[in-house]
Structure formats: C-alpha cells, structure tokens
Length: 377
Ligand code: ATP
Ligand code: MN
Ligand code: MN
Image (cartoon, rainbow, N blue to C red; front, side, top):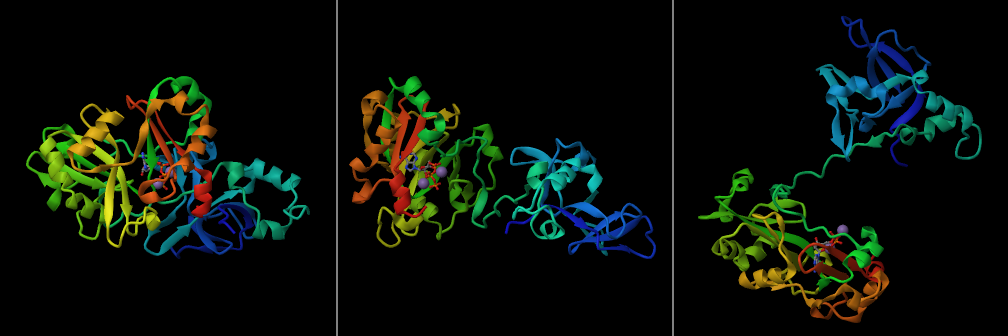
C-alpha cells in the first residue's frame, strides 16, 4: 500500500508541549505528533493531515504561508512537509488543517463511496482514503545519493548528456515529414553503459568551474574527466570507466588534440548491464557514438565523430551506413523491423538502431520491442 500523504482523521490527543510554553500544544493524529497553536483544535476534531514528505503546490493559496520555504521539485514550485525541530525537546511531524478549509475534500466525503461501493465510512477514512491527487500534492523524493565515487554531477552546463529520444516520442510523422529527405547515419545501439570523456582547455572559462582536480585528470593544457550517464567519476582502479579510459590513454589523446571537446560512447563488457556483448571476464571496451563541441556548444556531426574516434584510438559503434531517411524506410514501423535483420557486435542481437542526421541536427533511436521482452525489462 503506498503511503497516504493527505488523510482525514480525528485528533486523538492534545497535550502541552512544556510547562512554560502555553501558546503551543501537541496534537496527536494517527500516531503522529504535531505542534499546533493552543486552542485551535480539540480532541475528536476531524482534520486534514499532511504527512512528512508531502510536497504542497505553491499554486494553492492555502499554502501561501510557507512561501519563504518554497523550492522547485519535479518542475513544480512548492513546500515540502518535513520533521520540524524548533527546539531540542520538541519534534513536530506533519501539518494539520481544519477540514472546513478544504471544501473539495468535504464534498468528496459527502458524495463518494468507499472502494467497496459503500458510503464513506470511518473505517475507509482510517485505512484507505487519501486526497493527495485531489489537492495536487505529490511525494517529495530526494535526488539519488551522491555516489562516493563521484567527483561531481555531470557537467551539464557545458556538455549535453547522451539521452536520445525514441522515434515514438518525437511524433514520428514529423520525423518523416520534416527529415525524410535528409541524410542520416545509421548505427547499432549497443547495450552497455553511457560514458563521456571530456577535455576542457585551461584557457576555456568553464575550466575553472569544474570540480576539483584529482590525479590523472590534470594535464598541462587542461582538465580531463570521465563521466557516467549522470556523474563525473573519481579516478579509481575499480572503476571500469576509468580503467578503460586509462588503458586507451584517452586523457593524453585528447590533451594532444588540444581542443575542448567531449567524446561520448558506450562502455560494454564484464559486469556492465549483463554484459550482453559477451566480453571475457574483466574486459571492457569503449565504443564512440557521439561528440560535443565545448567551444561551439553543439554536437559534432557524425562523420567527424568517426574521425575523432580514430584520432584518439578508440572504436566506434558499428555503422550500418549513411542514406536518405526515406530510402532507408517508409515509416517508423519499417525502421523497427530493420533491427533484427542484422546482428550486432560479437554476433549478438541488437537492442535497436540510432539515426543521426549528418549535420547533427536531428537524432532518434528505434528500439526492437521484442528485445526488451526477451531481456525482462
Ligand atoms: P538506459 O540508460 O536504461 O540504458 P537507453 O540506453 O535507452 O536506456 P537512452 O537515453 O534512451 O538510454 O538512449 C541513449 C543511450 O543509448 C545513450 O546514452 C547511450 O548510452 C546508448 N547508446 C548505445 N549505442 C548508441 C549509439 N549507437 N548511438 C547513440 N547512443 C547509443
Ligand atoms: Mn532511456
Ligand atoms: Mn542503454
């Protein structure tokens, strides 16, 4: 049963919070103790209770009193209900509002039946009813914990992440209408882990903004970095990303090129995403599929990416070919049907294909639905 963040409950107890503080009291609702203004509530009152981690929308005027503590979560401005500890002996958990301030909830109670078709009962209120959807309240979730191996977040201020949208989510007709006559590069979508290596020249203003240098990431002319999909990683012998970068000497290679650029590819091999390309124990390799020009703040076009991979001595993901999109297929379904017609790296099944317009202006992926089924995802 998911947590119920907004419930309607009776107050079961009112107690003083201390012998000296007469203005505030503790109110108990369903096991939670909340500090309230003395005299506002009494035992037996039916109230609306907001549990900790309820995220209240700023658009609702009833929450305007928390304005000073509004912040953005999931693109929404609002207030997070949290455990409050106004002084060492007092802990307050949750918020209580009089039911009369929420006519929409009262209305729901009067007109709704419980989940078994019976009129709303005390039992239903106690065990099942929740009103977060009615009020636009969501559950606050912390961003994932900062990994010890991370040096910092992925440097989104200067490098684009590697996500690629599915053709289905780009409104597929538009792709064929708008880009049908353009030349695309078609590559195999490999199924490992996203890895970005970057080099930022010392002379570039962004260099100073990057988090601390440690060991192998400093070169005379700039700063080298290794990132997973969402984080920049510390140099460690246990990191397959760093091990591969070091084995290929990617830092030195990029330093030698003397440009501010990020090279992006798929790390595949032992212990990575079920090693679907079936690499031997402890072996990994890096397959370049893209690059980001840090100077110009734009994608490096696909043919130049192939050249760049070669220039730094790294492999490139398998290129099926280049062609006018409409000559490759007539519609998205036909594109999908192409996926199983060839084998991927090391003779394995392919997850999908990635199409990139030759000027780097449009890109999308096509996934084989049956691949996902077979791999239980
Ligand atoms: P997940 O992160 O769960 O693996 P995904 O691979 O579908 O999902 P998306 O952002 O949807 O992630 O797709 C883009 C990703 O595909 C890139 O981040 C990269 O890791 C991977 N990829 C593999 N092969 C290619 C390729 N040939 N061209 C571009 N991206 C590729
Ligand atoms: Mn994805
Ligand atoms: Mn993937």
